Amino acid sequence: MIQTVRGVHDLLPGETTLWQFLESEALSIFRRYGFEEIRTPLFEKTELFARAVGATTDIVEKEMYTFADRGGDSLSLRPEGTASVVRAFVQQSMHRHLPWKVWYRGPMFRYERPQKGRQRQFHQIGCELFGPEGPLADAELMAMAMHYLTGIGLKDALVLEINSLGCLACRAPYRDRLIAALRTSAAQLCDDCQNRLERNPLRVLDCKRESCRATITRAPVMLDHLCPGCHTHFAILKDHLTGLGISHQVNPLMVRGLDYYNRTAFEITAVGLGAQNAVAAGGRYDGLVEQMGGTATPAIGFAMGLERLALLLDGENRHTLPMEVYLVTLGNAAEQAGLKLADTLRKAGLSVELNLGGGSLKSQMKRAGRSQARFAMLIGDTELANNVVVVKDMLQSQQQEIPIPETVNHMITLCRTSP
Ligand code: ATP
Ligand code: MG
Image 1 (spheres, rainbow, N blue to C red):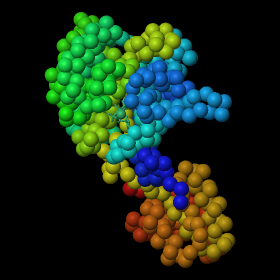
Image 2: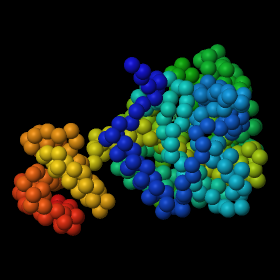
Image 3: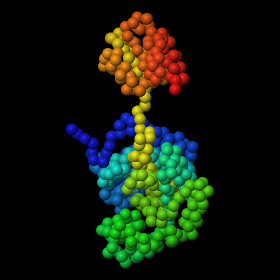
Image 4: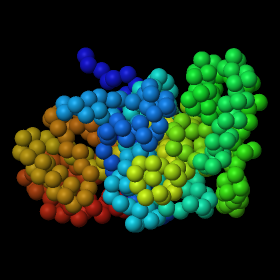
């Protein structure tokens, strides 16, 4: 038997209803903020991610699904959504249409170690906002993320953490300080961190290893070395969040795994997910559009992991949709009439499960019960001869005969008025 690739899962009926709910809530809530959906390709030139995400990030160095196509070009399955959205922004000259507000949904691919809440194909819903530079946009975007997460039914379990990563002006001198400070106790750092120290020192702050924590907590943090512009931006952002009644925690050690962020970084974690507890993450990336060859445009965005949201909501929304009608037919002629009747009812808007594969009255009624249909309709030889159909209310075990020409109107009324 051929099975799925490791770290990749099927979403079965029942689960997909929950996912459809997660997506339709995004559509409905993001719309109120003026965001429209964008769909970009699942694969791009490898160079796009190397340049946008950062050549020295774990994602680009170790986690991308990269392959040569038959023409010899190096392509990669997208590991995240922002790079493609920025590419589209630049390619389609969207700087002429600011503010540009888009959201996306779909699979992302990273060669990671699979565990609960961490897959190799996983799914994100993300939002990107291009144009505004000030902290008002940051606050509104975080408010939208929180609105969505509470809207789908996650309540007190959420924690919003924020940080500032500074800008080009203040990050470079801070980076030097950080390297200098970390070097003095480099021997205590794990191998990964010793490596990161020279290449991507901010990532050291993110290391979860107990042995590195002591060194990290003594290291200087960006928040203490912000330039006046970044300092004010962060202060106003906190005021806006407070004004909106959104509780938040400042986490000076939060750095993001992607190189493109500056100033505001944020993460939303949920209690109850264990180690993989981040459900959403994002931040500002004011320099990325220009870096990708476009007209300099500030921007901010975030992405949420759908598998993790589904884990948190599991059990609450998992169900298959019950049918309205189960159509029982007895005999060949009735089967043919049933096929036609089901067709008519469905075209009138009702959901109808037509009995397939024959069976006795008893076994068909059993299937009707299992389908959780609100009504069963029954056609046999007698009904056919009288041009009627029997309608059975599955909750109240009442039944009545309806002339076939009247079934559409009758069933529509019944389905609308029945609890
Ligand atoms: P983590 O710290 O969990 O590795 P990350 O910093 O790599 O997350 P981002 O790249 O910012 O995450 O992606 C945003 C969100 O996408 C995460 O908060 C998480 O919910 C989800 N996510 C990221 N990687 C995976 C994965 N491999 N499997 C499932 N969900 C993921
Ligand atoms: Mg990660």
